[in-house]
Length: 281
Image 1: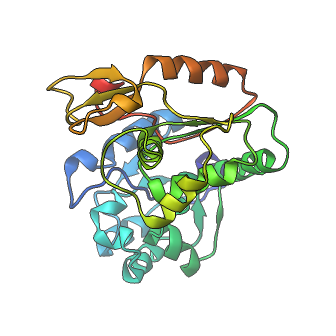
Image 2: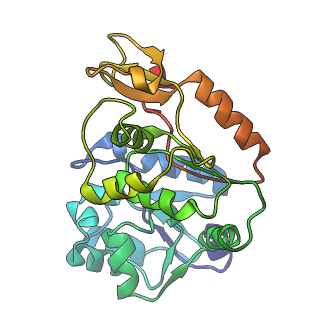
């Protein structure tokens, strides 16, 4: 999309986010991403250390056709995640047309995603379009076996994905916090917190005897997420009350690996363990 715009002599202003900063923090700056992008595009990318305001507006006004500019992390401003209209309007001043390539966060109610496209003419990029085409194919006529891997920490949204794919997928491989919650509600393992009532209702409908559903048969546990006290492998039913589950175990990996190798269509959403800590990888 960027190359297409450059070739057609557009002024390309890139906006994005990185991490979960509480305030402006250099470790979440997009400057290193700009340097990487220069190598990928084989073209100069000018990095600006803010994403709104008079200084940025002037820099953009002075851009030349075909030039690429990367703005600083939108999440340095609370208005981004709060979907603040004033913040969205400040972004809208910077361009004439909005093109989204943020497929993975298109569901978020953030200013640059939900409000900005309403303020100026908008559309989607080539990659976003390919994502939609791929999902449409999966929905209508997937190559089978269709294997859906679901992990991560967003319980309320992931449980709805599981419910939706129960009738479509040949195999559902579950890990991460969503699997832990299911095991907990089904009385297989101990632990907290307890999920919301609407999540419990969906989990109660799940039949663990359903051959489509594959939950961990062994897990990696520790008293805390640092893994510094000890780490051990055990069955879900043998998790102690002071322990947390931080990864799937080796037997589960073998089972999941075999199913994935035989799959013709794979959909994967979310990590199956605490990938942030190398001890649990």
